[in-house]
Length: 245
Image: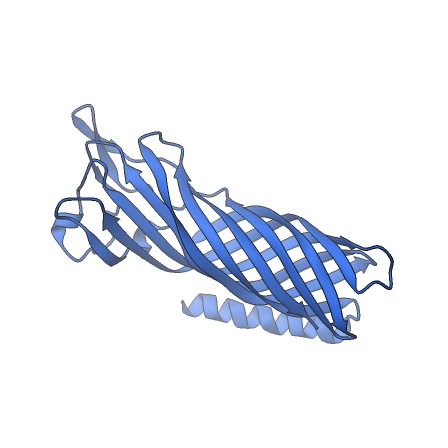
């Protein structure tokens, strides 16, 4: 956590330095309600639920041409994740975590595992914008592609749909990969309400291409325990509301 905080402070100071030197760079802040879900590449570990969450943070844009910019920022993603369901006869999915009771280690078939993950994120992307004319206060924008580096700060898990093994708020940080990489795209409108203030509203899609889980667990298959090595990914839609100065 201390390393992530240090990286965040350094990143903010660097952006502030560039802002002082570059006239074509602008800053803003955004808050984005999110809807996320989890999927795996194993048919017996199915995604069955989603999370409502929130992203917020600082944005930066460097315009290298009148309507083209490199975008970046520093943000926080809260309550990202979803729910997966165990289709094997039994499964051990969080072996590295210190769960609150031994009975939560091995889960029965159809048990649901709910993930709630918080991230610190650094996005880097390309932004294009246009409008009816240069003087119009209303412009449209598109962001494609957007690559995001995420650092996990907190991971909580819930176990549901069992007879006597349900639990909430288990610390599963050890069974969630600490680094995530994703790609995305987005679009929307921006409206200049003053010389130095522009409102932004839009939608965005984000998809992780790295594995969320550490793949340290085992599952009971054909009478024997084997390694659980499915790739767990996360998809997300967000509604962006922000302001640039």
